[in-house]
Image (tube, rainbow, N blue to C red; front, side):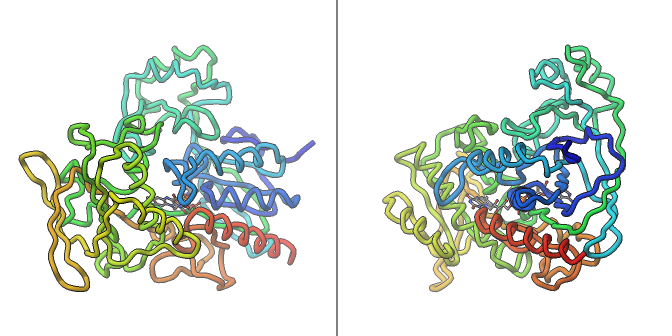
Length: 431
Ligand SMILES: Cc1cc2nc3c(=O)[nH]c(=O)nc-3n(C[C@H](O)[C@H](O)[C@H](O)COP(=O)(O)OP(=O)(O)OC[C@H]3O[C@@H](n4cnc5c(N)ncnc54)[C@H](O)[C@@H]3O)c2cc1C
């Protein structure tokens, strides 16, 4: 009998888990590290803080450069994990404490309650009965979900979850009554389990730079200024508008859109580094707009366009689009035209100093990626670089993977995670 079952959720009853490798973070990097480890026969424990796996990639509409949906890569990884009894997955879980040394760590993991057990069939009756609404964090707060919700359509595990803020709310009893399977347990409590592991991979990824800090760019002030991560959700068929990219203020079609590159990036006052993917992400998002609106103009304001390595081909391809205009210029200011709620971008050409003003229906701020490790450092005194990414190759602390290490695209994150899996196996081998 497999000591490890490919379970999802916090349903296991064992008080101590043993695994060769612990992977923290269930985005593309963590999932890759976990499955690569498991497929060479090592037991791996994957700990994800959210109610489902997938990280930021699950919230994208399409991947550059091939423009395939995230379900593509995700489903393959999930299938590999589901069929491999060496992987154990804990969602709604967080590492609280780590002690010991390489090859022999003791880890304390907190399991937060889902308030929904494995009898859930995702029939949705609880959601229909629920009267409470909350901000939908998966859609970056653009819309609401009920207090009991499925995180998103391709969520793994496919199981509802209750927002902990409302578990004690009397009104939730209606959801319990609506569930004919007895799947909702509002009295579930957090608990702590222990694990013994040989190596630790830290793949906690990133968050978008807070665009409200860019006070001259109007985010949060003008409805027709959004960020690049929001654009992914607007374009997505399971997003807040069912895939219609339109002006948030009035749902009007797009005739002219402006992409503001380096919104806060490469700026000593905000993020001093380049996130490496924002130019490609904007070019990709331009294709979402052009697909839906064949007559719409796309204007991209940049300091310089960065499309590393093989991604140069994607840049070349979009340059062939006669409605795609590149403007050298750093957007310093965005204001609103009060007559129509269009937004006016003011940019300075970084070579000539010339000022351009342009009115567009919608502006997208290409904000960069901030490593979660900057605010929540990994355990074991793991060295970080000046920006909060895990410092490479110090041989100290946890093994980093994916964007916890540096701004990577998906394929580089997966490659990095495979390397991390190998490093972890070597640590294990030294025991
Ligand atoms: C606007 C935009 C568009 C993009 N589009 C593309 C694209 O088209 N193609 C492409 O190749 N790349 C794209 N990228 C880059 C891509 O999103 C990243 O390469 C990818 O998300 C990296 O995956 P990751 O697993 O390292 O991090 P994440 O995706 O951030 O995953 C990290 C996971 O760790 C979990 N976690 C965090 N902290 C903890 C903790 N303490 N304990 C447990 N779990 C934790 C998180 O909940 C999350 O599930 C885009 C980026 C942006 C900003």
